[in-house]
Image (cartoon, rainbow, N blue to C red):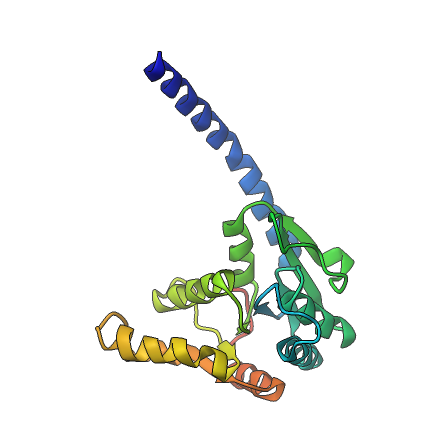
Length: 228
């Protein structure tokens, strides 16, 4: 009886998996249709827990305001903290402000600074992550947690393995990222698990001007276009 119960449950899961394909396709189609029309953008990552009075919130606003003034739209995860600061900076500059929202048990709610026609909801993290990468001409990564690191290392892996063309990846906040970079150089590189050139994928910045300069200088010799 126990074996039959397990087989029945397994078959039900397989059926549900098959139907999930259509929902996944729908998220991709909707995302591609909307995102393909937004123009050159920069994806912003960082902690959802950063409060408006925190210096990194203010710095993110300044970065995204200057990026918007330089002609780049801003893509965030649509939630609070650094995401809200990014959308807020773009909104204040009159730039494109995109929010890729996802349903989470905590921390995630739409912020009010996303353009009404550029707010999208996702159920699947992997679909949402494709949108961040495919339609961004750069990643600006502020202090954050596991989700921020997930996005950072996925982008680095895709570039390292030549699945996408290189684009600027900028770590904002030297003090915050120093320990990680020291470990990458002193442990990962020393062990031979990455190539020295892989470190060139990352740039450090502490001001809005530095961020805009890195991105502008990169695209003096490269084409602004969707990735993949």
